[in-house]
Each structure stands twice: as structure tokens, then as C-alpha cells.
Amino acid sequence: MPAQAEINFEKELWETAVSLRGTVSPAEYKHYVLPLLFLRYLSLRYEQRRGEIEQALREPDSEYYTGDPEIDAEILADSSEYLKDNVFITPVEASWEYLQAQAWSDDIKLKIDNAMRILEERYPEQLGGVLPRIYAASNLTVEQVAGIINLFSKDVFTQGNGADRLGRTYEYFISNFADSEGKRGGQFFTPHSIVELLVMMLEPERGKVFDPACGSGGMFVQSARFTDNAQTLSFYGQESEEATLRLGKMNLILHGLQGDMRLGDSLLNDQHPGLKADVVISNPPFNYRKWGADKIDGKDPRLKIGYRQGQVTDSSANYMWMMHYLYHLADGGTAGYVMANGAMTTNVREERATREALVEEGFVDCIVQLPDKLFFGTGIPATLWFLSKNRAGTHGYRYRREEILFIDARGMGAMISRRQRALTDAEIARIADVYHRYRRGYDLPEDEPGFCKIATLEEVREREYKLTPGLYVGAEVNDEDEAPFEEVMPRLIAELRALFEESNRLQREILEDLEGLV
Image (cartoon, rainbow, N blue to C red; front, side, top):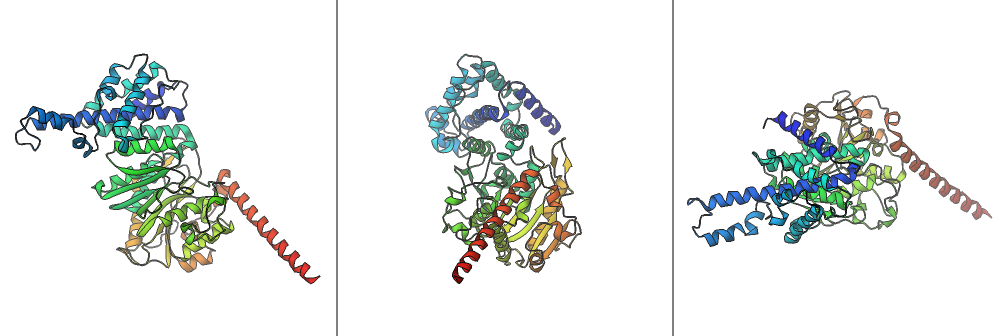
């Protein structure tokens, strides 16, 4: 099928799915639609793989050929023959053929829940906690459920590589659900152009890839696409929302990937405490306030850089996320992540001290300021940060501990809708190329006014450790005016609170000094 036809087909599928939604909110609806699409994928992959094995059993030159019907039957029923290809045997009552035949029955929702249960119980290690049994208790009508089943039963999914087409449809759907939910959608899905830019800059070719705010797993899927052999990468993630984690696990399986994705609050309940990753890639919640700083032990090993004992603040979790990334970064590795603009200049005492420490201790490698309107449902601008443990001239990279690369990409991007912008392929390639040349030292990029500059550590000190690219590349800096209220106000409140605390401390010292004179 031609590429343009596939795009139109995905759009047509989406419009049909939306027409079936009725009064169900997008936030709820995605948790019914996407698992059914996933179930369709599991059934299709099993049908395809079983057909391949059956064909091989009939061919004398095949490694599967036995000539014994009983042995053939054993091979066809052997789960290991399928699991090595990330395929799951689908019993009759969990098969798509069965559900399609029963689509209009009054108890179809019970049958779907039963199909989910059968597969989870048969494959607890791979599918445990992935398939939700939520249909019987839902407000979906039989007509809505039957409509979704028929939607994913279209012939196009059995033509050519239908499994790959289902994977792309899953991505298309999850992106549109995120768009429909606006700002909240950004909690489980990062827009494609941002993910692609992060991946292109980080170049994950082998080793461990970690995302402690993994959402629907898009960072992992794009990382796997970067390398010719995804088997050279292993994926580790954590997500605080159970339903979102389920979407992420489905996404990996749909793309033929395996990963260790766990449930929990990464900052307060790290589920990968001993992990050291070669690549950390993430988009954490922006300006996350009242996140539980009081629960962080002063001896937490993540606080060895930047934050010191007793200085963790509830004003924002931004810098605690950075400490988390750095702690989990292996020697020679790099962390690339999305961060709110305010983190570049915050004057909250603990956060500024941490930013200074990250600079002085040689971890800040590159800052990329992005244009606005890249994210779903909000015009809030953001920045990409890169922290590296290879800046001392190790692991194939040049020595660059005394400098930082600043890139100002605020003028980039093209509007893809009335509300949203996306970086173009050419822009992504341009930014990534500058970073690669900066890290490796071949054809070192020259300073380009208004776009990029390799600044010395002394220049950063002179600007009081402010990391806004415009201060260095010569572009106009107007962050406070451009930043939206939702970002500026919490930061101002936090800074005011810090000033009040300092004022109270000084008052106490003055009173103590005066009392000492009596």
C-alpha cells in the first residue's frame, strides 16, 4: 500500500474510532480502544507465525521438517517456538476470530475481559498487568464495542505486513489521543519531533537505555529505530500511572521490543536502584511542585552532586529529576531530557546551587532552547538538557570539561496545526549534527550568531551560571516575557518564599546578636 494511502487510512481509522466514542471522554476511551488494538496484534502475530511454522513443517529441506504428525502437533503447541519471536499462542476464546464472531453478542464485554484474563494467566511474566479487564464494568454499549472490533478487523491488517501496520496505527492513535486531551495528554506522550531530536542527538546504538518517566514508551520505540539492530539495546523504564504503564508495555510489544518497565514514583520509590544506564532519555513532569521532598533522606546517594543534605526543596522537582538521571548514568554515558525553561535561570537557593554544581563539576554538556507550541495543549516553551559523563576525553569523545554548547532553536519549527508546531527533519538533522561535531571534535562547529556557540566555563561564571542559550549565541533574551503564567508564577512564588526564609534567618541572627549584648 502506498505511503500516502497508509496515512489516509490511519486518519480514516481514527475518525471512525472517534465517531464511535459517544459520550466517553478521550482520557477513558483510549484505555478501551488501545488494548483491543493490542489484542488484535497478538492474535494476528500468532496466526502469522503459526502459518509460517505449518508451512515449514511441510518442506523436507526445512529445519522444522519431521514427517511425524504427532511431533508436528507438539511443535505447533510449543510456546517456546513462538516466544523466541515475541509471539504468544492465542487460545480460541482469546483469538480475534472468536471475538469478531461474537462482536454483537450481549455478553461481548465479558468475553473480552475473559480473553484478557486467559492471555495474562498463560503468560504472567510477559503480559501480567498489561491486559486490562475493564470492559464488563464499562459504560460502553455493545454497538460501540462491536464497532471497535470491526474497525480493527479490516482486511488491510491481513495484507502484507499487517502487524507493522497495527504498530503504526497504535502510535497514530496514541498521538491523537494525547492531542485530544490537551495538556494532560503530554503526561503519557511526547510529540514525535522532540523524541526524534533527543534520539538523534544521543545516538543510542548499544547498551542500556533508561527512562524513569517513560509514559507510553515512545522514547524506547524511537531509540530502537535509530539502530539497525534493536537487540543491541535493552530498555528500562518507570512510570507512576498504572494505566499509562500498561500502554507503554503494549507499545513495546507491538514494535517487537522487550523492556523492564516498572510501576512507581521514580523520585520517591526508585524501582531500578542499582541501574547504571548508557543513555538516559526522558520528559519528566514540568515544574512538579509539592512532590514529597520531605521524604528524601539527606543521605540519599542521588544528592552527592548538587543538592546537599537538608537542601532538597518542594518548590519544584526539576532538579531532583536531574539528580536522578545523573545517579543512574553509567561512566561514559549521556542523559538527554526535556526541562522547563525556568530551570536555566532559577534563583531558588537550592536549585541555583545545584545548577552551579552541575556546571562546575563538569556535567552540563549542551543546552538546546526549543520553540513554543511543540507540546500538546500548551504553548509552554521548553529546553533540552544534556548531562554527560564522557566530557574528560574518554569513550571516544573529545575533552570538553571547560566548555558548554548552547543552541538556540526558538526560531525553528513549522506549524502542523492551528495549535501545534513541529521541528522539521532538516532542523533536527542540523541541531544533531552540531552536537555530534562538538562532542567528537571532527570539523568542530564554529560559533553561529543567533544559533549556536561553544561557551567557556568562565563565560558561564560571568553570567552567574545562567544557562539560557540566547545569552551566549547573541539572540534576544526575553524569557520572562515569553514564558507562560503557568511556568513563571510557581517559580516566582518559590523565589519569594526563599527570600522570606533568608529574611527570617537574618532576623534571628540579628536578635541573637542583640541579646548577646545584654
